[in-house]
Image 1: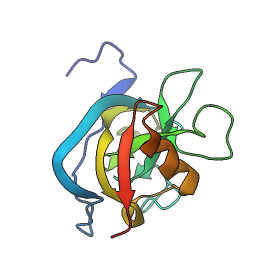
Image 2: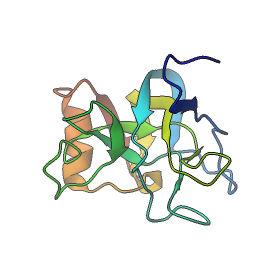
Image 3: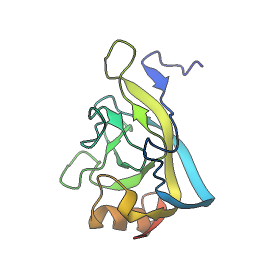
Image 4: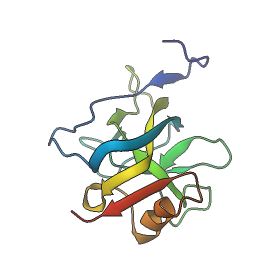
Length: 142
């Protein structure tokens, strides 16, 4: 599938990770949008390496590029504001083991289990619930 940029590839994987965990409490009223993950995006709990991003990873938007990466409340590049939740597992490496940008889906509206999200904190959950950043995700501890 051509994307118009040879450095970007489709990065969608399975909605259920190896454990079968599902972070969405209800998929009836979910809104997602296609985003580009920055090649530098990491998931500190990725298995077996941090370049394997798990679905349920909270994402922020890098202001300078418009691409997305893991939410980081202490950053100052735009990723300090939680914008949504990664909807698929994504391996950021290409066939040669080189990190590259990836297209994927990010949930921007829905009901999630906050205990099944990765890389978030109270501030991130508040960011997503306010709706001021284009996101309206209600999280509950289930």
